[in-house]
Length: 238
Ligand code: ADP
Ligand code: ADP
Picture 1 (cartoon, rainbow, N blue to C red):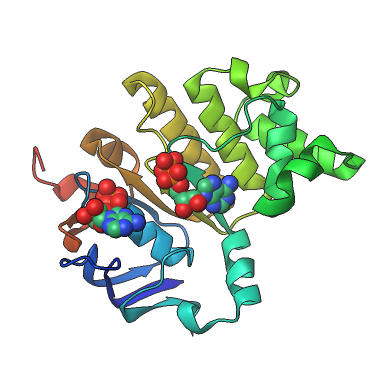
Picture 2 (cartoon, rainbow, N blue to C red):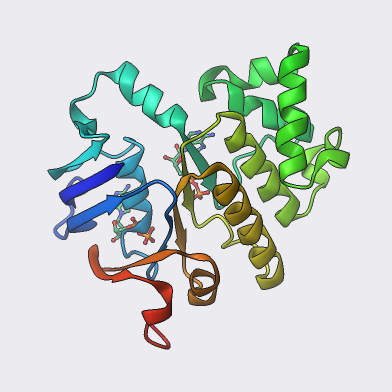
């Protein structure tokens, strides 16, 4: 379980907090969509949860342990349990789908060298398994630069799955895709989430997507939680 206990985040020199007084408890199995306009604090919230952004006040608790006070090695371990999916994919364009997916096995720093090097049979099998989950098995040897946006994000999901995550954190993962593709990629995310009983926290700005897929919606505005509940009770136009 992940808990945010009265979390406030100020960036250096900022007069207003980016996130303000947030209380949340996030449980396994929840598919949480965070809705809010640009600048609402969605991205900052995600970065507090994976320990990329320190909190100014309050605490983030991972299974009851204060994230900020964890030794660096434990923070890294936690990050490796949290699969990240990014708006702009953060793939390596000139490498193949398979090579990109393999980078999910390694830390960011060593990922390039490892991905172009040798890997063993069980690693290759794992790649095939995760590519099958996102429907890209037949594209394993294609270069990522030749793929469509939706296919690239499916590679991003497959890469995150290589970590065998307990948690999915998505920072606007479908915001760069056209509406139809966004919906199908979101559907894949939800399927993988359900199959693996993950805890997912996904930033979106499309209310319709949250309505269709979320088990819980958190509305952020000006850094504050203004809604926390089921998607079917969202106001129209909210
Ligand atoms: P969202 O993801 O909802 O667009 P962000 O978390 O990116 O919102 O931003 C929340 C607020 O914090 C905004 O006012 C933004 O300008 C500010 N902010 C975000 N990142 C930084 C940063 N690195 N330094 C200073 N201010 C930032
Ligand atoms: P986007 O524009 O896709 O939202 P950003 O470029 O804003 O992504 O990056 C979001 C954050 O994630 C940055 O702090 C960046 O350093 C970090 N980041 C980017 N790529 C990776 C990666 N492969 N693994 C871990 N962190 C990453």
